[in-house]
Length: 168
Length: 64
Image (tube, rainbow over the protein chains, first blue to last red):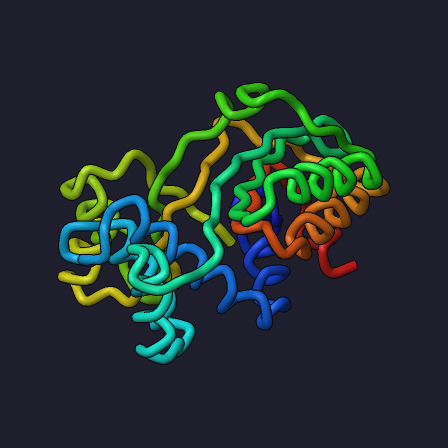
C-alpha cells in the first residue's frame, strides 16, 4: 500500500517521540505546569490542564507527580518558571517546520533551535513565516478494522468533523 | 467529537490536538533523510515540547 498520506508523517513523528521515553515525563510535566499556570489548577475549568492530565495518566504517571506539577504551575510549590515559545522555520527542500518549546531559559532555547536548523540544512524563519500553513486541529485516529466506514462517516458528520480521511 | 466516537463504542487509537498543514511537501532520497535528521535533532532537545511539519514521504523510504 502506498504511504502517500499525512499519517505516514504523523506515525513517524510519534515513533520518534516514543523512542525518547525518558523525555516523555518531563514533557508531560511541563505541559501540566504551564496549563495550570495559565488556566488555574482546577481541571474542570481548564480544558488544557484536563487534556494534559489525561495524557499523563495514559503514560502511567503517578498521581503525586501530577499533583506536584499542578502545584508548581499555580505557585503553591517552588519550581522553574517555564515560558512557551513557538519557532517557525524551514527544513531541507523547503518543508515548513513548527517547533513548540517550553523553556526556563529563552536564550538557550533560541540558540539550540537555531543551531539544530542550521546544522541540518534548514533555517529558522520569522514568526509567521510558516504558521499560516497550519491550523490547530483535533485529530482522532480509529483502526479501520474497528468500524464500518459508512457508520464512521455518519458519526463524524453529525459531530461536526472538518474532514475524514483514510490513512494507511 | 471524541465523545461521539466513544459513544458509538469505537475504540480510538490516538486522540490529540495537533497542527494540521494545508499542504504537504513530499521529499525522497537525500533531502528526505536530511529532513528526518532535522526532526530527530529538534525532538532530542530538552526544551522541545512538540514538533510539527508538513513533511511527507513514502512509507517504503521510511523502512529502507
